[in-house]
Length: 249
Image 1 (cartoon, rainbow, N blue to C red):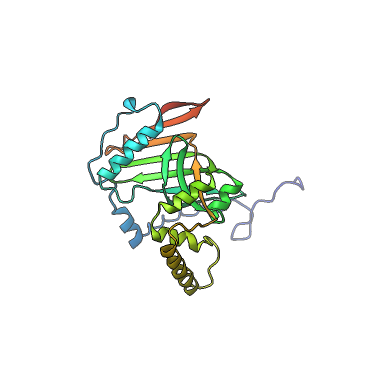
Image 2 (image 1 turned 120 degrees about the horizontal axis):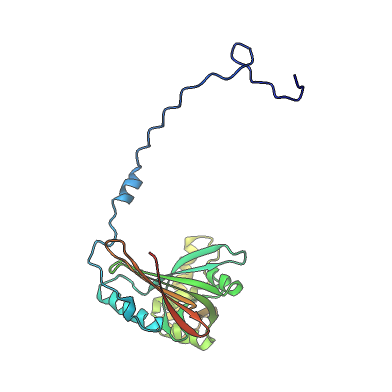
């Protein structure tokens, strides 16, 4: 026998030989879904009549279509249509997302604001590129926007604060967004002081308040369909021109 040949496994009797066949294991019974899963699966999607969308008639640029869809969302009773998800990435490329308010949209881009020292502000300082997401379930519509982000001039940020409510100004005056908070009482004290100042000085400035402008490279309009034949129309900018494309849902 070749000394290098593998030795056959021993049988239970101690003799070499093939292993005894074993019975296949019985398949495990599927676990019952949890109460959370049952609740999750019971939720309806777009339990309403959805509007039509003919992409062939869409305008050449995305901004007019965004304005049309926004007006349609307001008319449909969509709650807070001006809120949007803002996705950024930190210096290591790790993503983050939060809900913020749209402050405007024009030929320059989509505008939003925050403190420069906030987490999103720090992300945009190191990686000035972001994505926005609007979701309007009242009409089964989504809009996705992404592109480079720039900082608007400081006078734009001051005008933005003056145009906002007393509460919004007070919140901006509190500042320190995303910093560690020692106690809720500390926040209460700072907020009360900021509210008093906002009432006394409606033109007060918050130096860290910053307006950001996302100039889109790509804008996608998604119209849901009850038969899941969703319409996805994407605008992509190339050489200063917009190109329209349909995407498979």
